[in-house]
Length: 111
Length: 114
Image (cartoon, rainbow over all chains, first blue to last red; front, side, top):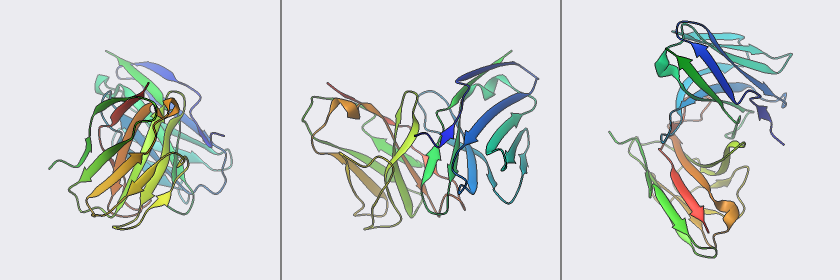
């Protein structure tokens, strides 16, 4: 059973607007969350992370929000740029070494 | 700096054949991982290693074996390939636990089992 879910397979946004990618999880033991970005024919690259002791983490145009009570995670990209077009994966882990990945959301930023 | 290199990039096998996928990293990372990515499933952890000579099972280990004889290399073996193992395989490494330092991924190996 999928413990980390990204229910939107795709998202299209106009350049300059905000992109919001969502992620839900079921395991209340998860205490660390990451977002990865993946271009075609390449491996995922780390984007941003957040620990469960925080509810927000910001890095430039990227902000991750965590709502523990709702078991929900979101990535905001402001402003969106055409180079942001990629597949975005969220991942979560409980104490230990294993990460669980979502199925990914394909973001297209329209110039 | 090559980072994480996976060999080969593409391979087609017949059912029952065996093969080994090689992952090499030049960053002196302790932790190494093998994932598979299937449509609609995201990335799933097959096996991982927390140091030279160590291996551990991940979420979907059946049908695969791994070895970490050298710190820089992590090998994934398929002893008797099955069509269900058709997938894109990613290797990753990290200097410390991924909750401290993020994983670096290779570009993947696309494997088809006929």
